[in-house]
Length: 122
Image (cartoon, rainbow, N blue to C red; front, side):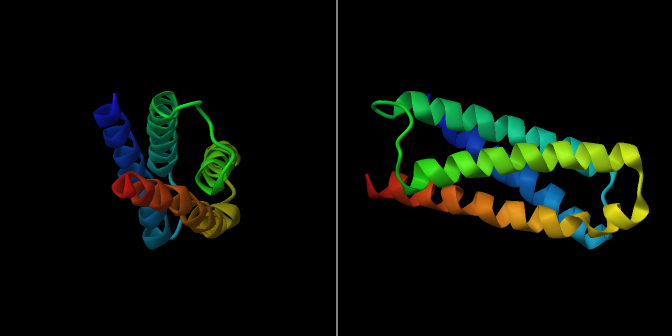
């Protein structure tokens, strides 16, 4: 199960990073970015669920647990907001959406990195 969890979390990193930075580089939110955000969220949720199942006692109220929960909530809000923006088709909002995307991505990196560090220290 650990292998699947690690693969899922890393796929989340790959998809989310591609979505966020390609949106920034292209200068506007596009439908395919939206798909990539949702795929990243799905892989992150799968990986986090698997990791929680492996952890003794499940969710831990510590730095990694709290930032991880915050990151998943922000990713969900991000994907929902991106969905709304795409369907509203407001070009000004689509052009500035990357600011929120980068913020969420940076927050998401905190538990990603802390989880990797904790895993290596065991």
